Image 1: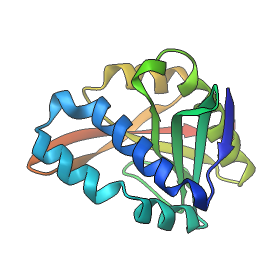
Image 2: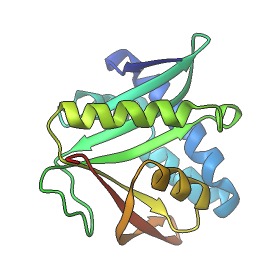
Image 3: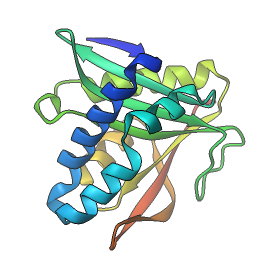
Amino acid sequence: MNIRYANEKDSSLLAELGRKTFYDALIEYNTPENMAKYVSAHFSPEIQLSEIKDPDTVFLIAEQNGGPVGYAKLKGQSKGDGVAGTNPMELQRIYTIQEYIGKGVGAELMKEAIREAKERGFNCLWLGVWERNERAIKFYEKWGFKRVGGNIFVMGEDIFKDFTMELSLTA
């Protein structure tokens, strides 16, 4: 598996990968209308290009057999509810395509996300995760993330409660 940084040429790839992985992960809990609205508002080549150009944003793309199998998006200068770190970096997204879930893609992306945050001088990594996504919560806890707060995530007409989880990078 290869993990690489995204560049401006990856904007279409990230938009497609983001739409697919987000949709596959959450469609069973949402209406197609709400999913379509959210995906079109957050995953387009133009939006991803703008994010790639943002110096506080980092995309890591996981590739296997020459194709993308997952990605992570990190955002510096971002602080969530309950986060204690004074210089936090947010892990905004970490997604794997369905066929590769459970095959180590998430672990490799997490290793690189932690390395990236440390290398950039951040003292904690935090994320938001849906309270009913037990598989993801267990994954994050395995990496040492602790629940520190919560927030509301709105998708169309649906309202979800997310846990805020934090990993200290100073220990």
